Every structure is written in C-alpha cells, then in structure tokens.
Length: 147
Image 1 (cartoon, helix red, strand yellow):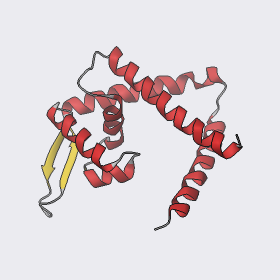
Image 2 (cartoon, one colour):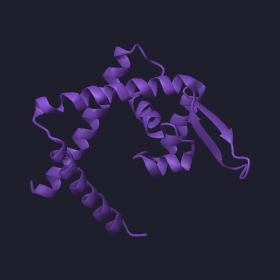
Image 3 (tube, helix red, strand yellow):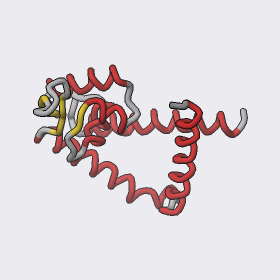
C-alpha cells in the first residue's frame, strides 16, 4: 500500500481510537446518557453559542447526525437550545451547566494526555510538524472537492 493510503487509514484509525478513549472516560465518570461523539461535540462547542450549521462546519460531523445528536444532548440536559431573535428559522445552542461540567472533565482528560505525551517520546515540535502536515492534506482535499 502506498504512503497516501497508509496515511488515510492511519487518520481513520486514530479517530476511532480517540473516540474509544472518550468512551472510556465517560464510563469512568459514570456518565451513560451521552456517547463519545456527543461528548466531543460538547467539547467543540466550548463556551461558544452557535447554530447547528456552524457546528457541522466546525467539526467532522455529518448534518443529519448533528441534528440528532443535538436533540439528544438537549433532551439529556447538556445543551440549551434557543431560536435566534433575528432569524426565527435559526436555532442556537450552548452548553448548559451540566454540559459545562462534562466539558471540564474532558478538558482534564486532554490535560492528562498532554502530560503523558513525553512517555510516548512525542514533543511539542513533533505535534506542530504533524499539525502542519495534516492541515496541508486537509487543504488538498478541500481543493480536490472543489466549490
């Protein structure tokens, strides 16, 4: 298999492995009313208020899945949903108090992982170089996909 296909496969595996880490973190916290993808969506929202469309653009989420996941997170008290005052068709979401608590727990998980990186012999420079390379690959795919 050539290097290009190896990279694509690795990125996919890394994403699945990371979601597994989030799932284990949620289980360790005794949280069962939200899944790993929803947890990462909460983390992506952070302190912002955004529309479902903006959330779709910000993350790697498919439109229909975003709507379903937002609905479930609202039902389970992690998100607050409000209609826009300026455009009644637009719905904005932001984290509830419960959502902020989970976001803080996921931030702590990320911080633990960051502190453990030296054990994997990964430096800040390694991560920076990887980020630049992955960003270039992302830009290439965006250009190939066209307008």
